[in-house]
Length: 110
Image 1 (tube, one colour):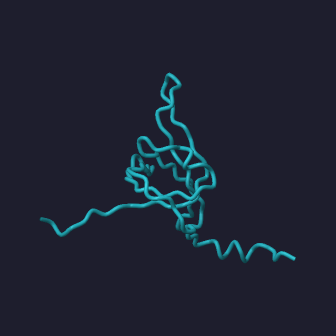
Image 2: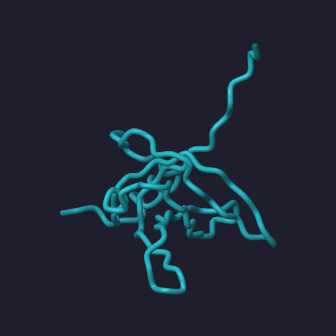
């Protein structure tokens, strides 16, 4: 028996929209949720995360807090994210390393 446990990569954030994937006949074959993140150079990147099989895309509508366990792969320099399973609904606020900076930049309400 092994003492090792499997590691997981979890993506957590605010949905910025859901996209449909269609085949050549125009049939919907899957969905992906768009998440936004800041990279090491403080640039913004959009991450397309393919939803797990059978996931309800309505649960990933724009503005909802989402959390997925993902597999990550790379092909020709592009990263791909595929959700392997859904986690429990996110009930805590999503941490954002730039939230304090954004609050400081906004003018105070009078």
